[in-house]
Length: 67
Image (cartoon, rainbow, N blue to C red):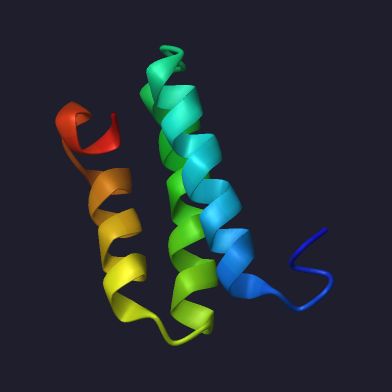
């Protein structure tokens, strides 16, 4: 819904929180990764590369980074 309204930064924030929640709840890594990647894309589209890089690193990375 936020993306439809054109608020991509908050879309990234919402997806980041969802990915963290899924990871904390013990969701499969593939499901958590599938949430981090659109967060990274949303951040990238808003011109916030640090947030995008962080989300991509968490999608690709360690369990510690995703928690």
